[in-house]
Image 1 (tube, helix red, strand yellow):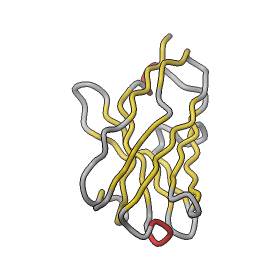
Image 2 (image 1 turned 90 degrees about the horizontal axis):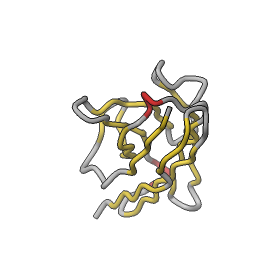
Image 3 (image 1 turned 60 degrees about the vertical axis):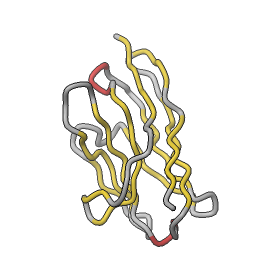
Length: 117
C-alpha cells in the first residue's frame, strides 16, 4: 500500500524559506518520478515541480528559481526547498508519484504552508 506523508509546513513571513519533506513507502521509490503539487482554497491543485528517477527536474513558471525539488533514494523521501516565499504561495502542499505530469494513485494528507505579508 502506497503511503505518502508530507511534513515541514508552517507559518512563515514573506521572503522566508521552508523545506518540505515527503516520506514514502509501498512502492519502488528509486524507480519512480515524483511531483509536488499545491492547492490553495477555492483553486485547483497545481503541479509545481517534478523530479525523475534519474534526478532531472522541471518546475512550473510560478516557482522556477525559488523552489528546488530533490530526492534521497536511501530514505525514500522527496523534498521541496522553498525560498523567497510570497503570500500567494499559501496552500496545502502534496507530493505524489507521477507519470509525466499525471499524478498516480491517492493523495496524502498534505502539509499546510501559510505565508504572511
